Amino acid sequence: MARDAKFVCIEHPQYGRKRIPVDPNQTDVDLGSVTLAHAGRIEVAASPYLELPKGTTVALVRKRREVEKKALEGIVAFEDVDPGDYNLLVAGPEPLQHKVIPIRVAELEEKKIAVEISPYKLTGEVRFGDAALPNAKLELMERDWTGKLAADDHGQFAAQMWDAAEFAALVTGGVLGDP
Image (cartoon, rainbow, N blue to C red):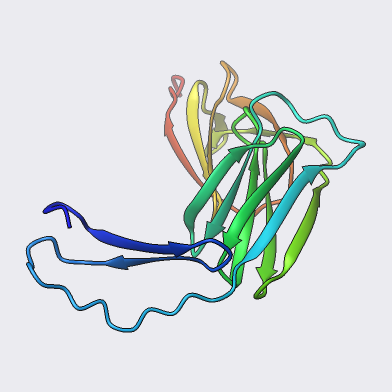
């Protein structure tokens, strides 16, 4: 094992994979009993009535960690997926173009997911008290994604969103006018 290795990855086709953390400072490591479950498969495609922008991706996320990410062009497959709960994170090139699709995969299951998106325009104004905050920077943080926007000279912003979301907002910068 390489001296700087932090994980050992054990995988087998049709059985998935396990990543086991190891201490690179130890010379002997007991991995214990390792069990691989029969893996599933997830096939993802955009609805035939939907044209996604160039650069759209889909990521398989488990426990807020990205397992794998691929360009969403045509049909995309995630192979050897361990049974469990996941999110598919579909992301376009614009900052708020995200859609989270929760899924559960069972042993040997083959899931087919059709991505449906109903885009809408999110508009708003950044204010400090009663005053608009021109040129402010916004960071919108949802559980599985983050998007960054900038307000214009009047404190207003607009962006296309793909899915309703609850997020925290962090506002920085901007200039307050004279009172």
